[in-house]
Structures are given as structure tokens and as C-alpha cells.
Length: 162
Length: 252
Image 1: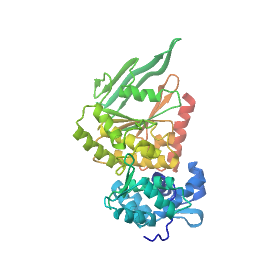
Image 2 (image 1 turned 90 degrees about the horizontal axis):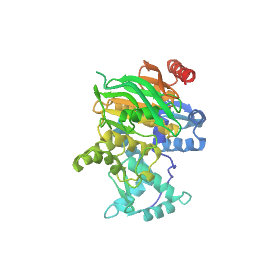
Image 3 (image 1 turned 45 degrees about the horizontal axis):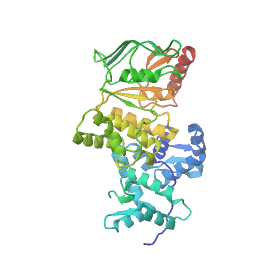
Image 4 (image 1 turned 90 degrees about the vertical axis):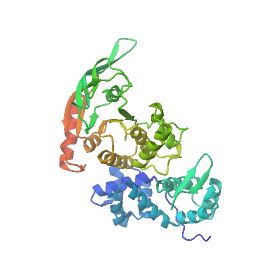
């Protein structure tokens, strides 16, 4: 399975991304990143992660330090909970790391893998990312989008639905 | 008839040397469908007031009436959401949501059904088997919401529900709470929220009750006439913030 162009996902709560979209809507759809961090008393480093995550998901763009709501971000804001999850699910399926893991899981008989095996793949694909943290973020995003599940008692990472 | 009525409610605690009056002569009523915020400085007894309404804490004097009848003990038509989330770390999300139902004698089948409905409503689908330590603060409080909603209360009592959360998480959860409250299929229509964040009260509530401190008493009861959705940057919003601040500073 060739791994092409795998970009990591930032260690960021999805709830932060949603908060950023709501905040941008209140600001008319565009705001300076530095001002957002200042007004929310948010660490700028953390806000950069949120901006990056929202951009990876196609919800905002970040020209010249500004954060701008993209049409998909506006669509997300106008949607109900289940439709929001659907938007995220479709966006995540397009992300190389998620699609890699989906292919990997589909190739397993029971569509699941031990956490240790997933960590090995992550370490191989993204050697400069701490695999434990990346795993936790993948699990949280995957759970929210109902793409991946993780059972801590059995330590199994699995495909939820497609 | 109001849904809930407090008549001359006082609460004091016995201390080794005398008594400490926490709340004094509180009277107000809440109509069905209202979103009421209770604000006041720390030490004004606002969290105690919420617990008196729920019945976890007993009154020293006065009456709490629910649909015109005095309530003895815990009012099972109310459910609490806590600042600290109050989740059991050894239970999964689903088991945490079902916990309050078991205590109310609801059958296993019905518990399962309700947990699934309210986990879906708060956006926690996919997290059923997660444990609290795997969750961010925002996800933990969504479990807190689902657990309270699953008992299908008539009144949701919220004690500083967003105060333990960072700003971006709080923005998201406030919006989600408003969506839940305004959804036509949601059984709970009446919310009483305690907060020390004045902007939060103005953004969310139909009415703000301002408490003064030591002992806590009602210093103002204000209907918020701003149209929804409320714009925190509007002049009208700022005027409201100033008004409530000055009431707390003068009397608190």
C-alpha cells in the first residue's frame, strides 16, 4: 500500500473547529487570526492548530493570516447535527491519512486492528509525529464522524461505517 | 399557574458559632418554556439556589412549588448539569448517560432506547463506548447534557455549565444548547442556568435574575428583550452588559 502525500492532522479538538466557525460567522465571515486569539484569550499556538484543522477539513481558508469562512463552512453552520457529521465524514474520507487507515481496516477480516498495529503504521507514515497523540486525535475525529471506532477494553481500532 | 414558584425561600447553614445565612427571602416564579439565568457575584448562593429547586438541599424556610404543589425531597421533574461534568470515570459514555435512568427505576430496554436518542441529540454518536478520560472537556459536557436530558425532565437546571471550558469549546456548546432548547421535538422547554458570566446570561436567557451577596437576595429580575440570535457585538447587547454589571457592582 503506497503512502503518498500523507499530511498529519493537528492535535486539536473538533469542538474548537466548530467554535471557530461560529465565531467567524459572528464576525461576518472573516477575521485576523491574531485578533481571534486575543479576543478569545486563546494561545496563538493553539489557535494555529485550530485554523490548520479547519482548513484541512475545507471549512475555512487562511490567506495572509486571516481566517475566512469557505462555502462548506457556511453550509456546516446552516446544517443540523447529523448533516454536520455527514459533511465531516465526507471530508475526512478524502484525507490521505484517513483513507489509508480505511483501506487498511477494510483489508482485515473483522475490519479491525489492535491499537499497537495502528501505532506502528502511524510511526512509519509520519515519523516526526508522536504516534500516541496522533492516534488519540484520529480516534476522536473518527468517532465524531462515525468513521472509526475504538474499544479501549479490547484495544481494537475498527471501521465504524462508510 | 407558573411551572415553578419560589416563595420567601431562605437557606442558612449551622456553623459552630451561630448560623450562616446563604439565601434570604427569595421569591420568583418561572413559566413553562422560559430560559432563566441566575447571575451574581461568587458567594451569593446561586448554586445553592439551584440545588434547593432540585431538592438536593433542603429549605430553611419558605416554599418551592412545582405546578402549584409543594415539593418534598428531590423534584424528579428536574435534572442537573454540573460545571465539573460529574461523570463516573470507570463507566463508558453510554453507561454514564444511562446512570440517572437506572436510579429512577426505568427498565433496561427503555434506558437503552433513551441513551441512544439523547446521545444522538447532543452529537455523541460514535462515542458510546468511550471512557471520560478519552474525551475533551467539550465532549465530557455533552455527556453531562445527554445524561440530564435522558431523564426527560420538565426543567433543566444548569450550574455554570460552560465555566470549566475554554472559549472556543464554550461557544460551540452554547450554540448546541440553544439548538437543543429550540428544537420542536425536545421535551424539556424550561431551563434555569446559574452563571457568573454576564455575557453568557444575556446571550442565552429570556430573563435574568440578579442576586446580591451575603446573604443572597434578588436585586433585579429583568426580561431580556433582545431579538434572537443575539449579536454580542451590537450596541444593544453592550448596553445590557453594562446594565447587569452595574446592578451586581452596586448591590453585590
